Image 1 (cartoon, rainbow, N blue to C red):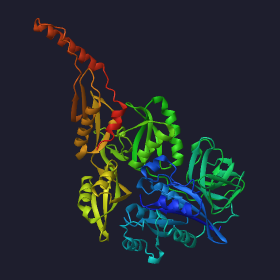
Image 2: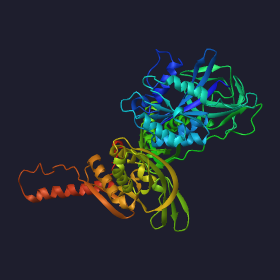
Image 3: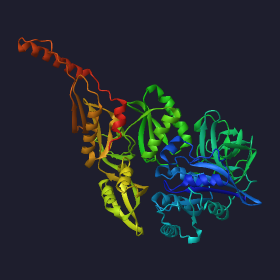
Image 4: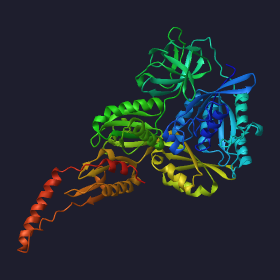
Length: 596
C-alpha cells in the first residue's frame, strides 16, 4: 500500500487539466503511442467538440520512480466548469492529494478557489502547479505570488510545467510520489469501499467505480450495498485503465471497478458503501451530501408514446451523472414528461445533448426556473418548482426566492460594466478585494433566478472572457414575484408560463409575445397572443388571418353581391375562431426558450 498514490487534478475551465493528464499517460506509457490522442481521458464526442471535461475520469498509471521502485498512481481528471462541481467533490472524496493547476497566462480564477477549498476541507495534500509556462504571455512570477498568498506555501513548493510540450512533467510525477501520502487503511479489516461513480453498459449492466478504504475484495466474493441492502456476487473486479483490466483481488487503498450483473440503475447509488455479506463493516463511509439542484426545467418527449423510453434514458444518465434529479409531471400543452433539476444552464444543455446523442431521445424543454417558497394568507408554506404551482393572487401572502453569494474575479478595467450587469440583475454589492494590482475580486448577493438565463454569457462577453464566476447558495428572501401567463386566443399555454420579478414582467411578456408572433404559423382566423398577470393583460400581439378573395368571381354587378359574400366569410371565420385551436409547433417552443 505504501507505493499507491490517489490524486485528482483541480483547476478552472481551460487551464490545461486534460493536456497535462495526456502527458502523464505518455510518460508512464499507460497508452501506446499508436492509441494516443489529445484529451485521451475525455471519452465523449461532446467533450472533444466543446473542449471541456464533463465527467471525471479515473485511470491507473504505473510509474518507475527508481530502478527498484514502481508506484501505482490512481489519477482522477475532473471538470473545471462551475456546473460540474459535484463531479469534483466526488473525486476529492476518493483521493489523498490534489494537483492544483493554474494557467500561467490567466492566474487564479474563481472556480480554482472554490475547488481548492473543497480539497482543503477533505485534508488533501495540495501540490500547486503552474501550467503553460511555454506561452509567450506567461506571468510566472505574478502567478507564483498569487498561489503563495492563497495557500501559504513556499515558492520552492510550486512546480512549473507545460502540458503541451511536456516540460516539467517529470517534476510533477516526483512531487506526487514524494509529497502525497499513501492511503491509510487495513487490508485485514472488514471490507469498506466507497462508490464514487458508475456507468451503464448495455451488455454487462451497471459498472460501479469504488475506492477501497479498508479490507480486501476478491473475485466471486458475495458483497452487499449498504444503502439498498441488496446482495450480489462480484462477477468481475479490476483496475481502471483506458480499458477495464480484470484482477483476482484488490486490497485497501486501491481504486477499481466491480461488475455484479445489476441491470436496474435504481439499485446502485453514488456515495454508497460496498461490504462483504459474511463479515460486514459496522458503519458506512460518510459519502457525499445529496446534491441541491439550482435550476429546474421540464423535459417532455416530442412523441407522447416515448415517455417510458425517456424515463429509462434519464435513469441511465443519472447513474453517470448523479447531480441530475427528476420526477414525473404533466402539462396540458405538452402531455407527460419530467421535472428535472440541474446544477446550471450548461448542465441542462449537456443533458439535452447527451439524451439526443446517446439515447436518440429528442426532447422539448420548458422555460427553466428555480425553486421558490410561497406563503398563503392561511399561513401555509408551499414549495414551487413550476409556475403552475403558483397560488392565486387572492390567496398569496408573499413569495421567497433563493439568493446566492456570487464571487467574480476580473481585471480592474471591467469593474464598471460588471457592476452595472449585477445591479441590473437586482444584485447587492458586498465587497471588493484586490488580489493583485491587476486582479480584483468582487462579491455580490444575487437572486438565483436572475443568473439562470444569460448571466454567465453576458459576463464573459463584457469582460472579453477575463472574468471568472463562482457562487454558493445562502438563503431564501422575500421578493415581489408574479406569474406571467401566455394566452393564445384566451387559452393559457402552461409550458410557457414563468415566474418573474414584477419590475421585469412587462418586458418579459412583451418579448415572448413578439417572438411567438414571428414563430406561429398563420391560420384562417385571427390569433391573439397575450401575456397576463392574473386577469390583467400586460402585452398583446395579433396574427392576422389568411384571407381568401371570395369576391374574385364577381365581375361587375351591384356592390351588395360582394358585401353578401364578405359577410358570409366573416361569419365563417367567427365560427372557426370559436372551435379552432392554436397548436404551438415544437420548433416554436425551442426558439422561445432561447430568448435573450
